[in-house]
Amino acid sequence: MSRSPDKMRAWASINLSALERNLKAIRMALPSHLRFISVVKANAYGHGLAPVVTRLMRSQADAFAVANLEEAARLREVGTGWPVLVLSVLLPEEYEEAIGLGIHPVVSTMEEVRSIARLAKQKGTEVGLHLKVDTGMGRLGVWYPDFPQLLDEVNSHDTVTLAGICTHYSSADSDPEFTNLQRDRFLECLKLVPGETCRQILVHADNSAGIESFPEGGGFNAARIGLLQFGVRPKPGSLLGQTLTEPVLSFHARVGLVKDLPAGSPVSYGQTHKLVRSSRVAVLTAGYADGLPTDLSNTGKVIIQDKLCPIIGRVTMDQTMVDVTDLPTRPAIGDTATFIGQSGGLTITATDFASWAGRIEWEVFCSLSDRTQRIYRTDTAV
Image (cartoon, rainbow, N blue to C red; front, top):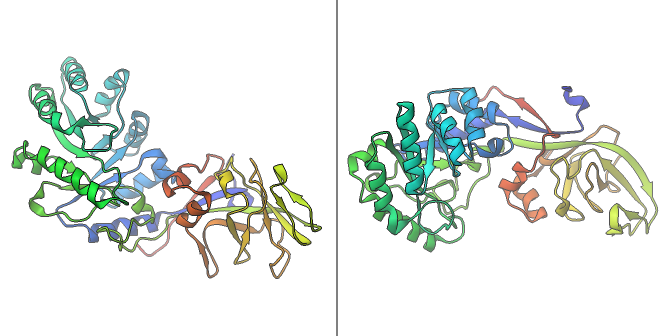
Protein backbone atom coordinates (compact mmCIF):
# COMPACT_ATOMS: atom_id res chain seq x y z
CA MET A 1 0.00 0.00 0.00
CA SER A 2 1.51 3.33 -1.03
CA ARG A 3 0.90 6.37 1.08
CA SER A 4 0.91 10.05 0.37
CA PRO A 5 3.62 12.00 2.24
CA ASP A 6 1.16 13.42 4.76
CA LYS A 7 0.21 9.89 5.85
CA MET A 8 3.70 8.50 6.36
CA ARG A 9 4.94 7.73 9.86
CA ALA A 10 8.67 7.50 9.01
CA TRP A 11 10.25 8.45 5.72
CA ALA A 12 13.49 9.38 4.00
CA SER A 13 13.45 12.14 1.40
CA ILE A 14 16.04 11.64 -1.34
CA ASN A 15 16.95 14.53 -3.64
CA LEU A 16 18.12 13.03 -6.93
CA SER A 17 19.09 16.44 -8.29
CA ALA A 18 21.50 16.84 -5.37
CA LEU A 19 22.93 13.44 -6.25
CA GLU A 20 23.55 14.56 -9.82
CA ARG A 21 25.12 17.81 -8.68
CA ASN A 22 27.40 15.84 -6.36
CA LEU A 23 28.58 13.63 -9.19
CA LYS A 24 29.40 16.68 -11.30
CA ALA A 25 31.28 18.30 -8.41
CA ILE A 26 33.30 15.14 -7.80
CA ARG A 27 34.14 14.86 -11.48
CA MET A 28 35.41 18.44 -11.50
CA ALA A 29 37.62 17.68 -8.46
CA LEU A 30 39.08 14.47 -9.90
CA PRO A 31 41.94 14.50 -12.40
CA SER A 32 40.53 14.21 -15.90
CA HIS A 33 42.13 10.82 -16.59
CA LEU A 34 40.29 9.11 -13.74
CA ARG A 35 37.17 7.10 -14.41
CA PHE A 36 34.32 7.25 -11.91
CA ILE A 37 33.31 3.91 -10.38
CA SER A 38 30.07 4.55 -8.52
CA VAL A 39 29.73 2.25 -5.51
CA VAL A 40 26.03 1.50 -5.01
CA LYS A 41 26.13 -1.58 -2.79
CA ALA A 42 23.67 -2.12 0.08
CA ASN A 43 20.75 -0.64 -1.85
CA ALA A 44 22.87 2.38 -2.77
CA TYR A 45 23.74 2.89 0.91
CA GLY A 46 20.06 2.81 1.81
CA HIS A 47 19.09 5.47 -0.75
CA GLY A 48 17.44 3.02 -3.16
CA LEU A 49 19.34 1.21 -5.90
CA ALA A 50 17.08 1.65 -8.92
CA PRO A 51 16.34 5.41 -8.62
CA VAL A 52 19.95 6.22 -7.70
CA VAL A 53 21.50 4.14 -10.48
CA THR A 54 19.05 5.52 -13.02
CA ARG A 55 20.11 9.05 -12.16
CA LEU A 56 23.82 8.18 -12.08
CA MET A 57 23.61 6.53 -15.49
CA ARG A 58 22.07 9.73 -16.81
CA SER A 59 24.84 11.65 -15.07
CA GLN A 60 27.55 9.67 -16.87
CA ALA A 61 29.05 7.47 -14.22
CA ASP A 62 31.68 5.27 -15.90
CA ALA A 63 31.08 2.01 -14.00
CA PHE A 64 29.25 0.63 -11.00
CA ALA A 65 30.29 -1.56 -8.07
CA VAL A 66 27.98 -3.68 -5.92
CA ALA A 67 28.50 -6.16 -3.11
CA ASN A 68 26.92 -9.33 -4.44
CA LEU A 69 25.23 -11.07 -7.33
CA GLU A 70 21.69 -10.16 -6.29
CA GLU A 71 22.58 -6.46 -6.35
CA ALA A 72 24.24 -6.91 -9.74
CA ALA A 73 21.09 -8.52 -11.14
CA ARG A 74 18.94 -5.66 -9.84
CA LEU A 75 21.32 -3.15 -11.37
CA ARG A 76 21.23 -4.92 -14.73
CA GLU A 77 17.44 -4.58 -14.68
CA VAL A 78 17.92 -0.81 -14.58
CA GLY A 79 20.26 -0.62 -17.56
CA THR A 80 23.06 -2.22 -19.52
CA GLY A 81 26.16 -0.79 -21.14
CA TRP A 82 28.08 -0.03 -17.96
CA PRO A 83 30.72 -2.29 -16.40
CA VAL A 84 29.44 -3.77 -13.13
CA LEU A 85 31.93 -5.03 -10.55
CA VAL A 86 30.93 -7.43 -7.78
CA LEU A 87 33.25 -6.48 -4.94
CA SER A 88 32.53 -9.43 -2.62
CA VAL A 89 33.50 -13.01 -3.31
CA LEU A 90 31.14 -14.97 -5.55
CA LEU A 91 30.07 -18.44 -4.48
CA PRO A 92 30.77 -21.24 -7.00
CA GLU A 93 27.04 -21.79 -7.58
CA GLU A 94 26.74 -18.13 -8.60
CA TYR A 95 29.30 -18.25 -11.41
CA GLU A 96 26.84 -19.29 -14.12
CA GLU A 97 24.41 -16.45 -13.42
CA ALA A 98 27.28 -13.98 -13.10
CA ILE A 99 28.55 -14.97 -16.55
CA GLY A 100 25.04 -14.63 -17.96
CA LEU A 101 24.70 -11.13 -16.53
CA GLY A 102 27.98 -10.06 -18.09
CA ILE A 103 29.37 -8.70 -14.83
CA HIS A 104 33.01 -8.45 -13.74
CA PRO A 105 33.80 -10.69 -10.75
CA VAL A 106 36.53 -9.48 -8.41
CA VAL A 107 38.69 -12.54 -7.75
CA SER A 108 41.39 -13.38 -5.22
CA THR A 109 42.48 -16.95 -5.94
CA MET A 110 43.68 -19.10 -8.78
CA GLU A 111 40.84 -21.55 -8.14
CA GLU A 112 38.29 -18.81 -8.80
CA VAL A 113 40.01 -17.98 -12.06
CA ARG A 114 40.13 -21.64 -13.14
CA SER A 115 36.50 -22.31 -12.26
CA ILE A 116 35.20 -19.22 -14.04
CA ALA A 117 37.40 -19.87 -17.07
CA ARG A 118 36.19 -23.48 -17.27
CA LEU A 119 32.52 -22.47 -17.11
CA ALA A 120 33.04 -19.64 -19.59
CA LYS A 121 34.53 -22.15 -22.02
CA GLN A 122 31.45 -24.34 -21.69
CA LYS A 123 29.29 -21.30 -22.40
CA GLY A 124 31.40 -20.25 -25.36
CA THR A 125 32.00 -16.79 -23.93
CA GLU A 126 34.64 -14.63 -22.30
CA VAL A 127 34.58 -13.10 -18.81
CA GLY A 128 36.38 -9.97 -17.65
CA LEU A 129 37.96 -10.33 -14.21
CA HIS A 130 39.21 -7.79 -11.70
CA LEU A 131 42.16 -9.10 -9.69
CA LYS A 132 42.08 -8.06 -6.04
CA VAL A 133 45.42 -7.55 -4.27
CA ASP A 134 45.60 -7.71 -0.48
CA THR A 135 48.11 -5.01 0.40
CA GLY A 136 47.27 -4.94 4.10
CA MET A 137 43.49 -5.04 4.51
CA GLY A 138 43.56 -8.72 5.43
CA ARG A 139 40.22 -9.42 3.83
CA LEU A 140 39.72 -10.31 0.15
CA GLY A 141 42.53 -10.41 -2.38
CA VAL A 142 45.67 -12.35 -3.16
CA TRP A 143 48.48 -11.51 -0.72
CA TYR A 144 50.62 -9.07 -2.69
CA PRO A 145 53.83 -11.18 -2.99
CA ASP A 146 51.69 -13.89 -4.65
CA PHE A 147 50.16 -11.56 -7.23
CA PRO A 148 52.47 -12.74 -10.08
CA GLN A 149 51.06 -16.28 -9.89
CA LEU A 150 47.48 -15.01 -10.01
CA LEU A 151 48.28 -12.80 -12.98
CA ASP A 152 49.94 -15.73 -14.78
CA GLU A 153 46.86 -17.84 -14.13
CA VAL A 154 44.60 -15.30 -15.82
CA ASN A 155 46.96 -15.01 -18.77
CA SER A 156 46.96 -18.79 -19.21
CA HIS A 157 43.26 -18.96 -20.09
CA ASP A 158 41.65 -17.73 -23.30
CA THR A 159 38.13 -17.48 -21.80
CA VAL A 160 38.94 -14.90 -19.13
CA THR A 161 40.50 -11.50 -19.62
CA LEU A 162 42.04 -8.95 -17.33
CA ALA A 163 39.44 -6.19 -16.93
CA GLY A 164 40.87 -4.55 -13.83
CA ILE A 165 43.25 -4.67 -10.88
CA CYS A 166 42.36 -3.27 -7.47
CA THR A 167 43.18 -3.14 -3.79
CA HIS A 168 41.48 -1.71 -0.72
CA TYR A 169 42.96 0.57 1.95
CA SER A 170 42.19 -0.34 5.54
CA SER A 171 42.85 3.04 7.17
CA ALA A 172 42.56 5.66 4.43
CA ASP A 173 40.89 8.16 6.77
CA SER A 174 43.15 7.62 9.79
CA ASP A 175 46.62 6.29 8.95
CA PRO A 176 48.36 7.99 5.99
CA GLU A 177 51.62 6.16 6.61
CA PHE A 178 50.05 2.71 6.33
CA THR A 179 47.93 3.84 3.39
CA ASN A 180 51.10 4.92 1.57
CA LEU A 181 52.65 1.52 2.35
CA GLN A 182 49.63 -0.20 0.85
CA ARG A 183 49.80 2.08 -2.19
CA ASP A 184 53.50 1.30 -2.71
CA ARG A 185 52.85 -2.44 -2.50
CA PHE A 186 50.11 -2.10 -5.08
CA LEU A 187 52.31 -0.07 -7.40
CA GLU A 188 54.96 -2.81 -7.24
CA CYS A 189 52.32 -5.28 -8.43
CA LEU A 190 51.34 -2.98 -11.28
CA LYS A 191 54.92 -3.02 -12.57
CA LEU A 192 54.27 -6.60 -13.68
CA VAL A 193 51.48 -5.47 -16.02
CA PRO A 194 52.38 -3.84 -19.35
CA GLY A 195 51.65 -0.13 -19.40
CA GLU A 196 49.37 -0.43 -22.43
CA THR A 197 47.30 -3.04 -20.58
CA CYS A 198 47.02 -0.83 -17.51
CA ARG A 199 45.69 1.98 -19.69
CA GLN A 200 43.02 -0.26 -21.17
CA ILE A 201 41.73 -1.82 -17.94
CA LEU A 202 40.40 -0.26 -14.73
CA VAL A 203 43.12 0.20 -12.13
CA HIS A 204 41.63 1.36 -8.86
CA ALA A 205 42.80 1.51 -5.30
CA ASP A 206 41.27 4.60 -3.77
CA ASN A 207 37.90 5.40 -2.35
CA SER A 208 36.62 8.85 -1.36
CA ALA A 209 38.77 9.00 1.79
CA GLY A 210 41.95 7.57 0.30
CA ILE A 211 42.45 9.82 -2.69
CA GLU A 212 45.55 11.91 -2.15
CA SER A 213 47.10 12.34 -5.57
CA PHE A 214 47.03 10.63 -8.94
CA PRO A 215 50.08 11.21 -11.11
CA GLU A 216 49.04 10.42 -14.68
CA GLY A 217 51.94 8.04 -15.06
CA GLY A 218 51.21 6.17 -11.85
CA GLY A 219 48.96 3.53 -13.36
CA PHE A 220 45.78 4.53 -11.53
CA ASN A 221 42.94 5.43 -13.86
CA ALA A 222 39.80 4.95 -11.76
CA ALA A 223 38.47 5.67 -8.29
CA ARG A 224 35.67 4.04 -6.32
CA ILE A 225 33.32 6.71 -4.98
CA GLY A 226 30.69 5.70 -2.44
CA LEU A 227 29.48 7.85 0.42
CA LEU A 228 30.74 11.11 -1.09
CA GLN A 229 28.10 10.80 -3.81
CA PHE A 230 25.50 11.16 -1.08
CA GLY A 231 27.02 14.25 0.47
CA VAL A 232 29.20 12.85 3.26
CA ARG A 233 32.68 14.25 2.78
CA PRO A 234 35.92 12.49 3.80
CA LYS A 235 38.70 13.93 5.91
CA PRO A 236 39.76 17.48 4.94
CA GLY A 237 43.29 16.38 3.97
CA SER A 238 42.21 14.09 1.15
CA LEU A 239 41.89 15.23 -2.44
CA LEU A 240 38.09 15.21 -2.24
CA GLY A 241 37.85 16.50 1.32
CA GLN A 242 36.99 20.02 0.17
CA THR A 243 34.62 18.98 -2.60
CA LEU A 244 31.35 20.84 -2.14
CA THR A 245 28.82 18.05 -2.14
CA GLU A 246 25.42 18.31 -0.49
CA PRO A 247 23.34 15.83 1.51
CA VAL A 248 21.03 13.73 -0.62
CA LEU A 249 18.96 12.10 2.14
CA SER A 250 16.95 13.43 5.04
CA PHE A 251 15.13 11.28 7.62
CA HIS A 252 11.87 12.21 9.34
CA ALA A 253 8.98 10.99 11.47
CA ARG A 254 5.89 12.57 12.99
CA VAL A 255 4.68 13.61 16.40
CA GLY A 256 2.13 10.96 17.34
CA LEU A 257 1.24 12.01 20.86
CA VAL A 258 2.05 14.85 23.26
CA LYS A 259 1.62 14.48 27.01
CA ASP A 260 2.55 16.31 30.21
CA LEU A 261 4.29 14.39 32.99
CA PRO A 262 5.32 15.40 36.51
CA ALA A 263 8.87 15.61 37.79
CA GLY A 264 10.31 12.25 38.76
CA SER A 265 8.38 10.32 36.11
CA PRO A 266 10.37 7.58 34.35
CA VAL A 267 10.40 7.47 30.55
CA SER A 268 10.53 4.29 28.45
CA TYR A 269 11.90 0.82 29.18
CA GLY A 270 14.28 0.30 32.05
CA GLN A 271 13.64 3.76 33.57
CA THR A 272 16.92 4.98 32.09
CA HIS A 273 15.60 8.54 32.17
CA LYS A 274 13.65 10.24 34.94
CA LEU A 275 12.26 13.72 34.49
CA VAL A 276 13.95 16.31 36.71
CA ARG A 277 11.11 18.77 36.16
CA SER A 278 7.51 18.75 35.06
CA SER A 279 7.88 18.15 31.35
CA ARG A 280 6.09 17.92 28.06
CA VAL A 281 6.95 14.75 26.15
CA ALA A 282 6.33 14.05 22.47
CA VAL A 283 6.07 10.45 21.29
CA LEU A 284 7.44 10.12 17.75
CA THR A 285 6.24 7.57 15.21
CA ALA A 286 9.60 5.88 14.56
CA GLY A 287 11.91 3.60 16.48
CA TYR A 288 14.71 1.14 15.96
CA ALA A 289 12.62 -0.88 13.50
CA ASP A 290 12.72 2.19 11.25
CA GLY A 291 16.43 2.90 11.57
CA LEU A 292 16.89 4.76 14.85
CA PRO A 293 19.62 2.89 16.76
CA THR A 294 18.98 2.30 20.44
CA ASP A 295 22.35 3.98 21.05
CA LEU A 296 20.52 7.29 20.48
CA SER A 297 18.71 6.68 23.77
CA ASN A 298 19.30 9.66 26.07
CA THR A 299 21.95 11.04 23.68
CA GLY A 300 20.39 11.89 20.32
CA LYS A 301 18.53 14.99 19.25
CA VAL A 302 15.75 15.77 16.82
CA ILE A 303 14.47 18.98 15.22
CA ILE A 304 10.87 19.95 15.96
CA GLN A 305 9.52 23.44 15.28
CA ASP A 306 13.00 24.42 14.09
CA LYS A 307 14.52 23.71 17.50
CA LEU A 308 16.70 20.88 18.81
CA CYS A 309 14.91 18.59 21.25
CA PRO A 310 16.65 15.79 23.19
CA ILE A 311 15.69 12.14 22.88
CA ILE A 312 14.86 10.87 26.37
CA GLY A 313 14.60 7.31 27.57
CA ARG A 314 15.27 4.22 25.55
CA VAL A 315 14.46 4.22 21.85
CA THR A 316 11.83 1.52 21.36
CA MET A 317 10.94 -0.60 18.35
CA ASP A 318 8.22 1.69 16.99
CA GLN A 319 8.38 4.90 18.99
CA THR A 320 10.82 7.41 20.43
CA MET A 321 10.26 9.93 23.19
CA VAL A 322 11.48 13.52 23.01
CA ASP A 323 11.47 16.33 25.56
CA VAL A 324 9.60 19.28 24.00
CA THR A 325 9.13 21.28 27.19
CA ASP A 326 11.17 24.23 25.93
CA LEU A 327 9.35 24.65 22.63
CA PRO A 328 7.40 27.91 22.42
CA THR A 329 4.17 26.12 21.51
CA ARG A 330 2.77 22.67 22.09
CA PRO A 331 3.55 20.47 19.05
CA ALA A 332 0.56 19.38 17.05
CA ILE A 333 -0.15 15.76 16.28
CA GLY A 334 1.36 15.06 12.87
CA ASP A 335 4.08 17.70 13.10
CA THR A 336 7.34 16.70 11.41
CA ALA A 337 10.34 15.60 13.46
CA THR A 338 13.69 15.60 11.65
CA PHE A 339 16.40 13.13 12.62
CA ILE A 340 18.71 13.91 9.69
CA GLY A 341 18.26 17.03 7.60
CA GLN A 342 17.53 20.71 7.77
CA SER A 343 14.66 22.58 9.34
CA GLY A 344 14.67 26.34 9.58
CA GLY A 345 18.19 27.40 10.46
CA LEU A 346 19.14 24.08 12.06
CA THR A 347 20.77 21.06 10.46
CA ILE A 348 21.45 17.58 11.77
CA THR A 349 23.95 15.90 9.47
CA ALA A 350 24.40 12.19 9.02
CA THR A 351 27.74 12.68 10.76
CA ASP A 352 26.02 14.27 13.77
CA PHE A 353 23.51 11.44 13.90
CA ALA A 354 26.27 8.84 13.65
CA SER A 355 28.37 10.54 16.32
CA TRP A 356 25.50 10.62 18.83
CA ALA A 357 24.88 6.92 18.20
CA GLY A 358 28.56 5.92 18.29
CA ARG A 359 28.36 4.65 14.72
CA ILE A 360 29.67 5.49 11.26
CA GLU A 361 27.72 7.17 8.49
CA TRP A 362 27.74 4.07 6.28
CA GLU A 363 25.95 2.13 9.02
CA VAL A 364 23.42 4.92 9.60
CA PHE A 365 22.26 4.92 5.98
CA CYS A 366 22.26 1.15 5.63
CA SER A 367 20.21 0.75 8.83
CA LEU A 368 17.20 2.62 7.46
CA SER A 369 14.66 -0.16 7.16
CA ASP A 370 12.13 -0.93 4.45
CA ARG A 371 9.46 0.40 6.81
CA THR A 372 10.99 3.83 6.35
CA GLN A 373 9.48 4.79 3.03
CA ARG A 374 11.62 6.58 0.45
CA ILE A 375 10.33 9.69 -1.30
CA TYR A 376 12.25 10.75 -4.41
CA ARG A 377 12.29 14.32 -5.53
CA THR A 378 14.12 16.61 -7.90
CA ASP A 379 14.64 20.32 -8.18
CA THR A 380 15.42 22.56 -11.09
CA ALA A 381 19.04 23.35 -10.30
CA VAL A 382 21.21 20.59 -11.79
